[in-house]
Every structure is written in C-alpha cells, then in structure tokens.
Image (cartoon, rainbow, N blue to C red; front, side, top):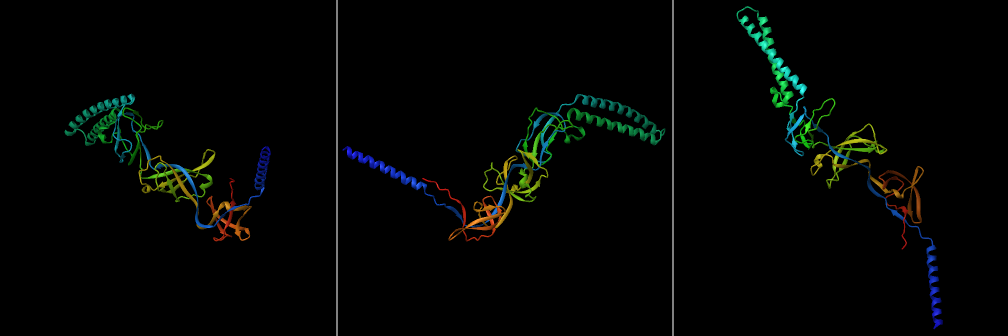
Length: 366
C-alpha cells in the first residue's frame, strides 16, 4: 500500500513540474504585434473653442433719486415691466437746515422788496394818470414791480423744492417721484420703505432705487485666450448654450466686439468678447446673469478625406502613414491639412479605398 502512495505522490509532482514548464514556455514565447486599422473617411472638420461667460442686458441702468430723503412708497417690484417715465417710488425730502434757512430768508426779502415796489408803482401810476411823469419813467417803475413779483414766485418755488421737493409751478415733474429712465424689466429694487436715500453728487454715486434693463436686447460677454483671439473676426456666428435652461437647441449669437487690450487672469492673457444674442431663438424667458458657454468655430474644412490623427507619424517637417498591402505595411509620405484634435485631413498621398495602420493594440492577458 505504501508503495502505491509513493508512486502516486511522485506522479503528482511530475505533473505539477511539467505543467509549470509548459506555462513558463508559453509565457516566454513572443506575442504577435497587432495594430488597429482605419479606413479613410470623407467628413467635415471643425476646429472649435468654448468660451465661458454670462448673458447680460446690453442696456442696464441704475435709477437714482435727484434729491436726498426717505422712501415713503414703492409702487413697483422686481420682475415687472415699466415704460420710460413710470413712477417706481416716492421720496419724502429731509431738508438741509442751512438751505432751508436761506430759502426762507430769500422769500422774506423778496416779499419786502415786492411790497416796496408795489408802493412805488401805485404812486407812479397816480402821477402818470395826471400827466405829471413821462411814460418812460412810468414803464421803469412798472418793470421793477413786475420783476419783484417774479422774484417772490421764484423764491417760494425754491422754498418748496428745498422743504418738500416739489415746485408749485411744476408739480408734475416733482423730484420726489422716482421715475424709470428707460423702458424695460425691473431686475432689482434694493431699497425698502423707510430707507434713507441720497442723490448722486461729486463725492457720492447716490443710492440706487431700482435696476432696469431692456431684456429684448441681450449680449453674451466672455473672455478668450490670446492664443485663439487672432482667429476671431467681428460678425462670426457662435452657438450659445445655457446650462440652467437645459434647452435642446442652443441659441445663436453674432460676435460684435473683441477687446483691443488683454487682461491677466490666473497667469494667462484673456481678451473680452461680446456677442449679440438672438433672443427669438429662446424657447423660454432669458434672465440676466445666466452662465453660458459659447462655441466658436475657429477653422472649418468641408468634404475632407480624414483619418485619425493617431495614425500619423511625424518626423521633422514630414508626415507619414503606414498603408496596408499584401506583404504587410508600407510607409508612405502624405500631406496633411486641418486637424480637429481627433481626425486630420489628408490632402495628398492617400486614397479613400486604402487601409492605414493605427496604434498597436493593447491585449489584456487573462
């Protein structure tokens, strides 16, 4: 029995040794080199770039008050459409005490002057009616009286503007009524009733009552790298994609402006561009500030004979491909054209019925 066990163990060891030898022999054998192969294809090539930017109104204005005061009424809200001249808010004037004092003093002085001018006029008129003074002297006194009355009216109007912000002679154009300066959509009203506001002056930009924009005239604003800006020309068409809308079809835009000066951003020189967006292409309402991507075609070739760029071998200024023949692969010089980064155009040296060699296939051993 022991003899049979010994023979069995020796046979098992021999089998393991032979199996290991066969495995290592197969592993040491050189594997055949297999390459990918491609047929030339006729297709249109485009070299494009994508610019990231935003959708903005071309005409966006900040409506500011003409006087300082306190907001008493807000008649509109963000999202509403307004016409030029529509009242957005009302302001109650908080008068400057020095200006108010001067205005009141001006009224008192003008009233004193008009009272004296009236007395002189009435006395001169009696003398003129009796023929004791000339018409010229009478007209001078009458003119002085008329001027003093106008000065009273002007002083009272000035007092009304300083104290109430309203001129009695032109109440409809009161500066306490904050009106929209353009026709458009109200984007924002950053103030509330009770807020103090100040008018724009040399030392201050003033308080913004509302931001109004014409949303029917939108532009795309973005920045393009200096390596690509030289291929752009005003009038080019671009495709605008707005991720927030998840639209099936992109919008079209026409390039209008290319900045003549670069700005540095993250160590790279960028040039600002602006393009007019075709709002009629939008299937839904566009909003100011949407992030958008613009695809711009930098170069285009139609009906080109192309192969994958990975099948091209570059050697100095020359380019070669390996064409499949009955005997294997034959090296051949070709002339290349435009590349889109994946496929490259072949302008001469290759026919569309030939097969070219690509990169070596990577085989995964099981």
